[in-house]
Each structure stands twice: as C-alpha cells, then as structure tokens.
Length: 625
Image 1 (tube, one colour):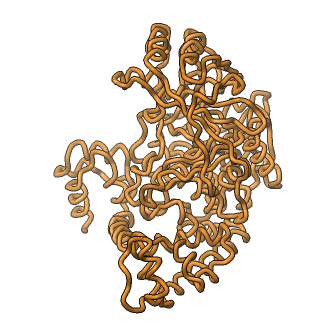
Image 2 (cartoon, one colour):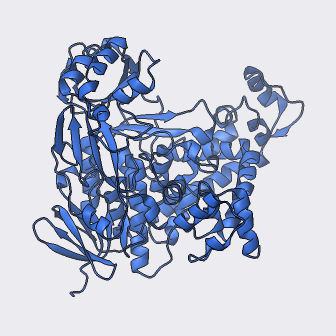
Image 3 (tube, rainbow, N blue to C red):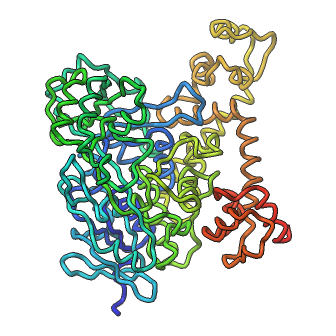
C-alpha cells in the first residue's frame, strides 16, 4: 500500500468537523477535510446562536484549549447576553446571536488559511478497513483517500429522512442529500446503531412581521465576548430579538393536523430531544398550558430572514402557516420554508473510548451527532477532542482526557461513554457536580496550560494568559495590602446600606461584604482605580475573577476537596478483563452494568447508573483496597 498522504481524514464540515480539522492541523498533522458542500462549512443548520446554559461554558473551554468556535462567534456576533446574572457565578452562561452567513464564511477563512489542511468536496460512501484498522475512505466519485486515522462527523446525514406532514424526503438537511453506505458498513463491523430525531422551525420573512405586537429583547448594554483573545473586541450595533406567544387558537389549528403528523402516526421512529421539543410535543405534553413562548431571532445583518425559536414542527406546511397567522405579530406572515423533522442513524457512544476512538475499529473516531448529541457546542467540543487525540495517537504521545472536575467537556464525554444516550444529549449546568469550579470566567485558568502542554495553544494565547495571571496577582495583592480609613470609605458604605467601619481595615475586607462589588471599589478608591486602568476587556475579566475567588473562597475550597477525594478513585485501575461473575456479593444489576461498560477505573465504575456505592466497596475489597 502507498505511504499515507494524510495523518487525519475528517469526514464532514460541520461544527465538529471544523474543530477536529483545525486542532489536528495546528498540532502538525496533515489533514484532509471532506465535505459535501464547501459553501456550507460550519453551517448553522438550526438556530443562529452560540452558547446558552452550560453551552456557553463549553465554548469558552474550546477557546481556552485553542479551538476556534469562540473566535468565530465573536467575529459574527450581532447580539450578546450573559444569562443567569441574577444567580451565582456558577450559573452565568454567555449566549450570542450570530450572523449565520458570516459565521460560516469566517470558519472557512480560518480553515483555508491553515496550510496543513486540504479540502475535497464529495460524499464519502465507505471506509477502507484492514485488519480492524481504518486506513482511508472511498468517495462517491470513486476516489480513495488514505490516512492514518479517520474522524466521522456526519451529523444528521447518515440515512437521513426529512418529514413535513405526509411528505417524506431522503436528505440530511434541507435541499441536501443524505449519506448512505458507511452506516451499513459499521453495522456489519459489529457496531450497534439507533435512530434519533431532531427538528427545525419555519423561517420567517421579517418584512411580514408586525414587531409592534411583540416584545423586544435587546442584548446586554455592556456586551461581553467568548474568546480570551482579542481583548479590545466588543460587538457594535446589536440587533434585537423579539418575543411572542402561541395561544389556544394556535394549538387548536395545530392539533387538527395531528392525524397527518409523522410524529404521531408512527412514520418517525427516532427519539426526539427532550429539552428542545417540537410544538406538537409541547401541546401534548403540556396540555394544561394555554400558550408557549416563541423567539424571533434574526439570521444576520444583511437578510430579513428570522428563525422562529420554539416552533419546531413536522406538520403539513399549510397547517404550519395557518397556525402562525394566529400568533400575535404574525397575522400576515410569509415563510421562506416550513419547519421539518429529520431522523437519522446514530451510534451509541458507549462503543467509544474516552479519546472518542471507537472500540471496534482502531484509529476511527466519532464526533458530534453521530454520538447521539445535539447542539453546535457539544459537537464542536467532541470534534476538538477527537482531533487532538487522533494527532497524539498517530505520534505515539499520551492521550488527552479531561475529567469531570476539569471541564464541562469532560462531563460531556464521561456522560456519553458511561451512560450512553436514549435521547439526543444536551449539556446543562445541572449535569456537572463541580459547576462552581467549572465557571465560564475561569476556563482559561483551567485549560490554557494543558493545551500548551500538548502543543496546541498559540504563543499569543500563552502570552495573554500570562499577562492576565500577572494582573490577577497584582490586584489580589493590592486588596490584601491596601488599607482604607473610616473617613474615606464610610460615606460609600452608608450609601450601600452596609455597616460603617471604626478603624482602618484591609480593602479585601470591604470587598467581602455582599453589598459591595469590586467595580464599586474601582469607582471609590482612587489608588485601586490606578492599577486597574485602562478598564478594557482584559481588566474586566481580571476583576471578575478576583471577586469570585474572594467571595466564594470557602465554597471553592470545599468543592475542590470533594473533587480531589473522588479523583482518587480515578487512579485505581480495573483490569479490562476483570471477571465480574466471580463477585457474588455485588448486585445483579451492578454486575450486568460492569460487564457491559467495562470501566477502566473505579471512578468510572462509580458513575455507572445501576452500580451502587456498596458495589464499589466490594470492588475495593477485592482489589486489596
């Protein structure tokens, strides 16, 4: 066989494929990215937004590791909001509306600027496998491309079927063909597969909307960003979103179409997402609700197209339009295309290793919706990790795995490998037991040097991180060393309804008061203001980090202690061939689950649903612990 021309072949140009190709290439691999349509790289197939609850944390982690989703989001952002500001910092989650065309073109520009990436526009129809090891791919036009590893990021294209009422179309996305061949080949190779379903709402012509009948939702007055790079960046001229609601009349019209709905007639076999249900699902599941919230989200600055978040549907297109005309503000609505449901093949992720390499075929990696996940952010995170690990394995280097106390990305992959999925998986802050450690503001502190250790973080990123770290140290030291007198600070404390001081105290003691923010101290204490000047994005991030570290110190220390105790179980390895049948003292369910998932450590075993704490105790005893 000829010498491999490529180190990594990435199949699919979506969010997972882009991050996979970029990470492997930046680490030095020769990469081939194969996609069906070069004009739709990193296409925002669903809503034109990045981030949200827990998803925003993932994007900041991708950025801290050297990925590009955060950078591209900042470049294409048209609105920024920090969600959950009224709650504690563990819950703060950045979210951005994006210009979806600019998002895609920005990603393409980044990839094309990387000399280590070649492109091929084609449909991959099969894998070239030799002795249970992938060595390349075959395409629809008959081309064979050889590589040392292959990353599949096929999204919803594996045997995809689009449903609109009685209409059924073979396709992986609107006006795009589905992919066949690989799925069947993988099943023949021993993989288990299943069917998932997702959906998308109709796209609205903004010229036909009466926005005076909706509620305007603006971005934050002081907008933030996602990437730790480009500290001078700030989005200008933010575009608003708009909120409206369904009503009983809307629900009645939609219900009339249920008899032809593929969701209720059984034509759709796949399982849909619990946390992003179709409007049909919402009407049935929440039958006691008279209305449901809808968001009109702009698709970009240079288009009148709007995404109607909350109205995903697979009903007949006439029914969709008839119902929409009963929604306040949409009485004269025109649509660009109807909503539709799509079902596709996925492969249960319990068949993967923590590197996202498959267990059955060596050097084959899965990332994105092929693993049963949903969301751009979850897909991008998996692509990044698959790209990193394919490069590391090809070069004989240790694998890169993040723990549950390291990153939301670690939680995501651990959940997928150990628990599998029975519906499209999406990340929430509630899935992370150490979410105070995994905040959106400290992703760089957690992950930048780890990225540097594997050769992915750029010199610019390391320099900025070092600058920020030094500034955090300076600000912290000032708060500990600088004292304030009663006459200088009491008028301010009284204004804040906080008790006055009777003698000089250190400045950090004032900051610890719940009524006082660190920005208050910048405004009031002139010496403090001088070390925080200029008040740019970098110093704003520094001040936020310092304040959280001071005010939540006790909670942070307690969570770290718990995490360290649990992490000890991760160091106790289990022989992959361990004979669980000989453990008569553990539960039957525990034995069955341990045999099925074959955890490599006691920490992994402890997180398997059905394995009880007493089962773990028995394992510890049998392992001499």
